[in-house]
Image 1 (cartoon, rainbow, N blue to C red):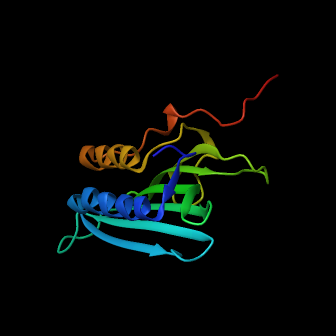
Image 2: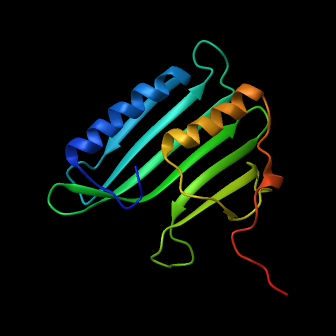
Length: 159
C-alpha cells in the first residue's frame, strides 16, 4: 500500500484479512475494524508474542487510520506501527502523521525507552505494515534492543 492510494471498501476488507493472516503466525492477535460507515476508519492489529500460554515479552500494535475518499473509497490519513519490548522497557515506532499543525504527513520514527527517555522525532521512510512487522520480528528473534544510534534527527540542525 502506498500512502496516496485510494482503497475501496472491499480493498480495505481484503487488506484487513491479508494482514490478519500474515500477523496471526507471530503470536496472539486481536483485531479492531472501527468506523466502516463513518468518515474515519481505524484498522488496529495488536500482536502479543510469544503468545499464550507463555509470558508476553513483546507487544506490537499497528494502527492505520483512513479518511473517507468519495462515496466508497478510503485514503490513509495516518499510521502508527509500534514495537514494545516489555522485558526491557524499550520501544521502536514508525509513524506517519502531521507534525506541528502542518497538513503534510511526515514519516518519522521514535526509538528508546518507554519511560520518556526516548529520543524525539527521528528520520524514517514510509513503511508498509508488513515491512515494519519484519523489522520488529527481527528484533524479537535476535533478543536485542533497537539500535537507536542508527537513526538521525528528523530536523536538520545547521550552525
